[in-house]
Length: 127
Image (cartoon, rainbow, N blue to C red):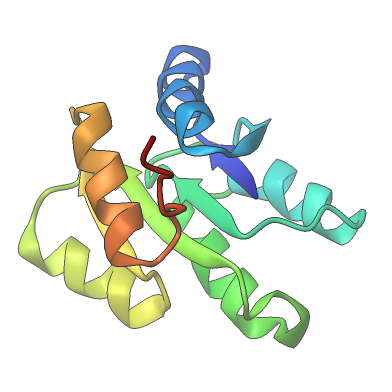
């Protein structure tokens, strides 16, 4: 599976990507929503987008709205990964079309738990 990690912090992109790789995701990165939209418009197909809220050029909420407005991208699972922790912000993101909301800082187990809820973690084979 493929994931798009959208955050203006290079370090945070690496942290999120590092949590996704062991779960079987191939990751792509963008430093803001507009760059992420450019990747999608250029034909990148992803199953998951992990999106920061506060970014220059295009914020995460605008990105979510843009993706939801395009029928070709309706199958992308959108998860906010942000420091925005106010209930009103969470409600706005979910109302705009985000599927899940993970508040920074988070643990790899927390991201796995959210993806498991969304059905995006492969069933592990037991030896």
